[in-house]
Image (cartoon, rainbow, N blue to C red):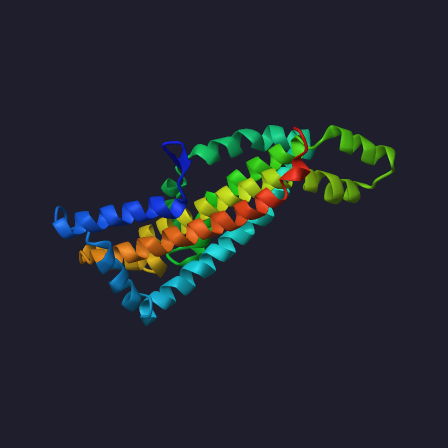
Length: 250
């Protein structure tokens, strides 16, 4: 962020909005936005309760399962679409449709098929994340440096060597970009899935706090979810920057 030609650290911007939120809260313009100092004070008690710990365990477990399935299926299908033309012709249109489609509209259908429980949330996380991973993997593999591919063929590289030592490494920045976006969408899938089911995990807490107008507790939970998504995204982005040199000059 730059202001008057000078680079301003991200922490300064964050501090500005926190101070503004604190002032709005103390002025009492809206009971929906309590002072952020009160939110942080309440958070210290909320985060130690057994109910919160159990909710986070359920949410993290469903997120990990859904994202693991999305990574396996997304990278495999994306690679297949890039390497086999008929697969691209069959699945390409559907992948692009589901990338832009409102996946949350499918959650009631998933509830009818899988029931009301963790399986539905896992499926929601999977659907939110998998299509962007497929798309970015397919683009990365398709745009792998042709000169490296031809060199590998001329030196007698096997298909396995071509895939692991040339295609994957060349496409790694795009694959990581897809994973980063998939993780962000996966966090949304956890929250939306549990909110619609409203009986498990952090979705249950969101529902309880909003219905009883416990706004300090509600916003403390929002901060936790946002922070979790941000830290995961930044960790993958850091690794993504470290491997950018594999991309060459495409």
